[in-house]
Structure formats: structure tokens, C-alpha cells
Length: 463
Image (tube, rainbow, N blue to C red; front, top):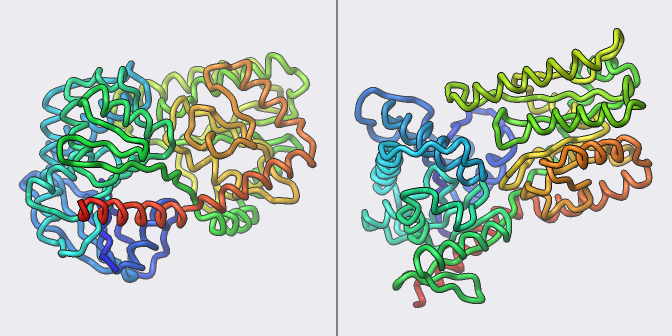
């Protein structure tokens, strides 16, 4: 069996004896443990000088190799190109797109650094798996160093259509970097088709019925691998979380009102402004819900130093203030807003005691919150998921109430439908969703990707 090498922007090395925190780490650490693998990436530390050699540690059967990044390069690579350019572009939010040539230079510099520090650690039979938009050029950088191993890339966020991607001045160079991989994986078939369209229109590449593309002598396989969750772990955490003090206090404070919950990273792509306006439309159109429903919106701060995120925070607070000022009664506040992180177990407990999960991003590669919400439910009395059609999860979870997040009337109607849905229908929808979650869980996701990467590498070697 080949050794698996995972490369991601950030590597959180667990403390000795510390369990995996859940989510992506569960799937990757499981794969790495099976293959006696290596996880390589940024340590989370910045330096004013040239970064040194990787720090290598071993925990739970997995080897971790981490490097520091120069402070100036990090700002251009991560805050600049990754999150001021690629993030808004790939999420169809050109209003936040801020191109600077120096950002692209720093982006490539850091990817070159990753390649130079990783290459000496590689073994002849390694299988490399690169993750996400921060590291698109890494495969090409490794090829320039003579690395001739199978390399796969998985994009966790959406892939933009050709007419959108060409707004990026360096789109062709970026896309050529993707063609250095043996396998490029996506969350949905829509994303893969956008990638193939870009290959044909932007580079003149040929694509076949097998969804491979040929650019010169190099052939690139593509695949669709919807990322999942550890369903059993979420169920376990939700049962424990339901019994914690915070969940008990929450349900007591509702005084019989039904709980609608949203839990998102504080980001313009999550549609929080549109969500609050839709909830206001619910209060306006359906006065009978007054005093009977409470929205708890949890917004985890992120990238707080970026101006665009500071602006959305101010707008959220304005809308929130207006809604609560207009509709609050002496014994009822329609929206509770928490701009802070909530522990995983507590959050799963909150999901379990809620009646409606409201997940309405304006664009999302997958959205694991939607899947966690469903897995956290009590099968005997499950809540209802209201889900954006523009989230990748909507292509799997068709038993949810699917809405367009830009249509505030439709979201308000969907909330009303969810609040009043019968127990029989809620159980039927939950059963159907749970079957899909188990079929496409985190373990199936990584097994499918690794298997296809091995096949793609064998195909290339045979040619």
C-alpha cells in the first residue's frame, strides 16, 4: 500500500492524547493512519525571516510536518490572493473581488515554499492529495522540482463558470496549474462541468466522455466527491449536547416557542443579511408566529482584519437592531444573535433541540452544517432543514425544503411550512436524508477519492 501524503494550508497537530475534533480531520486522519501517512502544511506561526525546515512530529499513527510562513508573504498569499481574490470570485461575489499583482506573486511564492520543503520528505511510492484553493499551484511547483508521483487535488469550494473566471487576469496561468494534477476532484457535477468548460474555452483542451481532459501530452482525470460527515459521531455529540447546561437553559428560555437555528462562519457568502431580511418577511407576513418562534443565529468570527468582514458585521447589527426594535414584545425577542464560537458538542445539542435549521448560503461548495443539522436530529421528533439551492448539499439533500436565498418571500414561506410541518412528514424527510448522509459519509468520500487517484495514476503510468 502506498503512503498517503495530505497537503493543506493549515495543519492543526493534535496534542498528545487529544481526540480528533470532527469534520474533515476525522476523514483525513483515518486515511493517514491506515496508510502510515504524512500531513504537511502551515503551522499557524508567522516569522519575520525566511522559514526554516519543517517541524516533524508523530501523533496517533500519523506523521505531521509543519512549516512557518513569512509574515509579509502570508498577507499576500492568504489574506490577499486566497481570500480577497479567489474566495469572492469562486463564490460569485465580484463586488468583493480586489485583484493586486503582488498578491499573486506572494501566492506563488508560498506555494513554491511548500513544494521545496515537502519534496525532500517524499518517498518513491507516495500518493499525494492536495487540498483547496490556497494550494492550486502546488502540483505544478512539485512537478518543476522533478516530483513524478501521483498527485490529486480536491477543491472544497465551488468552481466558477468560464465567463466569471476570466475576470481574473491570471486565470489562464492558474488553470494551467490545475492541469499538472493527475486527478482534480469537485463537490458537485456542476463544479466539474464548469472546470471542463474552462479547459475547453480558456486553454483549448480536449475533453472526452470519460470527463478527462487532455492538454498537450498530459491527461487529467476529474471526479465528483461530495464531502460528508461522520454521522455516528454527530449523533453521539448531539445526544450528549442535548443534556448540557447550555442546551437546557436555551430550551427553558424559549418558554414553549419553536427554535429556528442558523450557525455559520461570519462571511458574506453565507447569506446572513438576506437571511435576516427573509426572517423579517416571515414576521411581517405571518403575524401568528409572533411569540411562537425564535431565531437563534450563531455567527463565528473569521478573517476579522479584512475590511469586507468588518462591513458585513456592521450591516448585520443594523438589520438585527431594526427587526428586534420593531417586533420585540415585553416577553419575546424574535432574534437572538451570537457573534462567537460555540463548542461542537454544545452546537450539536442546540441543533437537536431546534425545530428548524436555516442554511441559506448565497454560494457554497457543500455546506457541512446542513448535514450536521440533519444528523443531529432525534429520529422520533426531527427538525426540518430549509436549505439554499445554491449550496452543494442541495444536490444530495432533496428531502429538505429547497429555497433560493435571494427570494426572501420564498424563504419566509418555507419557514412557515417548516414550522407547521406534521410529525409524519418530518420523520419521512429525515429518514430519506439520513440514508443519503450514511451513503456519502466522510469515510466514503476519502475512500472514493483515493481509489480514483490510484486509478488515474495507473492509467497515466500505462500510457
